[in-house]
Image (cartoon, rainbow, N blue to C red; front, side, top):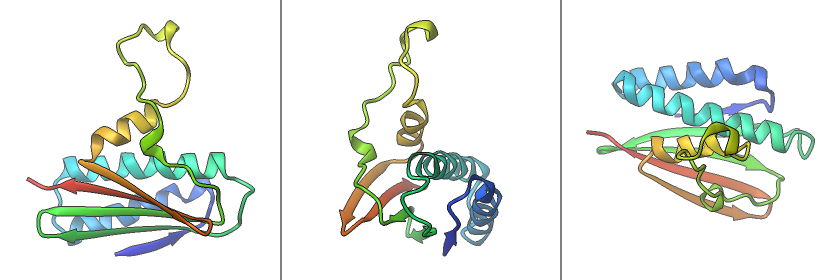
Length: 134
């Protein structure tokens, strides 16, 4: 299943509806559904926030079930490369007042899925996440 979402924070409900529809179609449990919603909310929000005026193009999202794996892809167009795998993990052991702001959302995304891949070519940025189903 795939969807094209306008580059606007107000489109988050469309993303949640998409995840709910996929969850129903693939018979996913609520824990997996929650993980997908959280990961997509974080990634989508970051894309809109950090590339707001770079393009007016929509953001592509797809979710596919293959055997016991879910493959979730988020595709952004006409943007600079940004590989989230290279973002340093947040130090969750430090007290809050000693932490550097930022990065906690991507830290959580990395823990919600089993693997993350990244592809970039000709202004097309693609994040590919895999979640293994029990």
